[in-house]
Structure formats: C-alpha cells, structure tokens
Image (cartoon, rainbow, N blue to C red):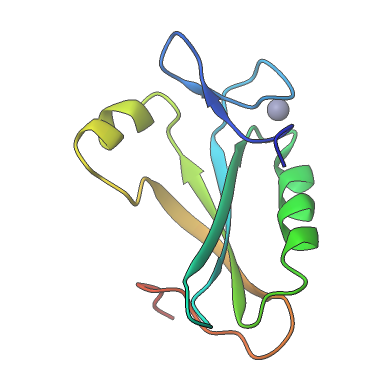
Length: 111
Ligand SMILES: [Zn+2]
C-alpha cells in the first residue's frame, strides 16, 4: 500500500502520492469484529480515489464484518485538525460492507 499512502507536503497539504494533486478524499476500511479493531486508510485525489478504494478492498477480503467508508476531506486543514486532537477529519458520504461474513457497522456509524 505504500505507493498510494498519502504524505504531508512541505506546504502542509496532504497530496496524493501518485500525482501532485491535493488529496480531497479518504477511503477507510474498518473491521470492529474480532479481538482488535482494524483500520486501514488512504487519502487520494479525485483521479486516484477509485484505485485507492480497489486497493483497500483487495486487502480486506479476509476481514470479517469489514466496512468501507469514503470521506471528503480538506487536505489543508488536516495538520491543524490533528494538532487540535480531532481524529474524525472528514465528511463521510459513502459506506458499504466489505470482506467475508456479516458487516458490523464501524463505531459512530448511524443509518
Ligand atoms: Zn492523485
């Protein structure tokens, strides 16, 4: 996953690591099932969002009760939000079950 994991640029914005565009989306795979809560995430620009989602979904095949969430994020606000201790830094606009077995909604998810 290292090729698509976002990084912080010197200007403070998180950029898609495969291109110079700002990463305005974040895809997360969460699995609250089992002894540990598993969470994988990656940020991407609009052009690479589908690739990031496909990559995360491919790695989540073995999860039981996994959940994919896609969020709109402000890459310029992320460093400031992190400094303030804000952990939920985006607006979730899509969620779907992934992996094998019944899906269990991630913590804080409301239908
Ligand atoms: Zn990109």
